[in-house]
Amino acid sequence: KYFKSLIFSLAVMGTNSLSAQNPIVRDQFSADPTARVFNGKVYVFPSHDILAPEGKGLRKDWFCMADYHVFSSENLTDWIDHGMIVSQNKVAWVDSTSYSMWAPDCVERNGKYYFYFPANKKVADANGRKGFGVGVAVADQPEGPYIPLPEPIKGVNGIDPNVFIDKDGQAYIYWAMGNIVVAKLKDNMTELASEPQIIANLPQKGLKEGPFLFERNNIYYLTIPHVENKIERLEYAIGDNPMGPFKMAGVVMDESPVNCWTNHQSFVEYKGQWYLFYHHNDYSPKFDKNRSIRVDSLSFNADGTIRKVTPTLR
Ligand code: FUB
Image 1 (tube, rainbow, N blue to C red):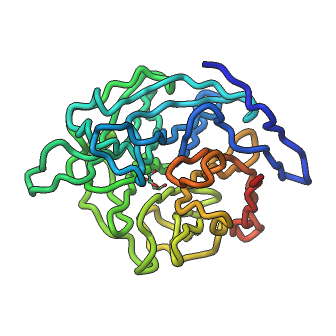
Image 2: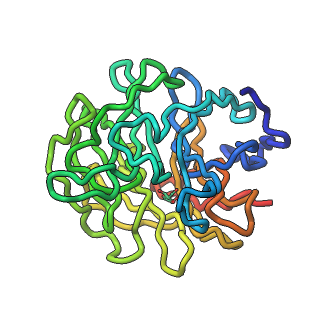
């Protein structure tokens, strides 16, 4: 389970500037990385891309994901794969023939770890909706074991959950379904405390997935992939409230120059340095649904705007 990135190296290039040899997971495909700092270590919760198994009636040209692993590191060089934490076969509400375990998140509250994941539902809800729901699995440690709740979160129909706990203790959940949606979470972290609302003032087109919100110096950054011409560009909007309104503020990372349709981001501060986690199809140049997670350092201008990150692509 323990592996060392072969040529992952960190080279100091100036104040607060590091470049890394990527990707960071090399023995399996991984995507949609959410990085969190728990107990002095960085934990990364990615999706786990696989090739569609034969004989299951699955599209060969689409995303295929059956489970999640979690990885941790104390130095961003040596990574431990803690193994599978949640699988589609073990979640009561998930259609285990769908291979649809897309981008997840994990947060800690009062010593419990809440892992949020989207997947296709087995049965339609009271409103007749099947589609994607968002489930929660709970653990006492970031590595697990995680116990999935028997039902998805009521009122959340969509993909790519992201949870943010503000300084006053209020938790928010963001997700995507046509638009970017936000709602407050109850303290139990598993039920909505407010009606879902579409985040106002964002571009009308091209925001389909992957919201990730973080706060720095009282600025709330809503980061998001934006697609205008087939390939996603990582952008961000800023505001002074977790529910918005937000104002689009710039680009964090340009579109892939070599045709990876998706990108998906998370931001974390670790030992005084900020990092952007994202993905690219490093090990699958001809099939961009088999991706690999990456990390690069990130910095801010004095006014709080984000300096664009150039990916350390090979
Ligand atoms: O990994 C499947 C989907 O692709 C994610 O949910 C999106 O964010 C995109 O990365």
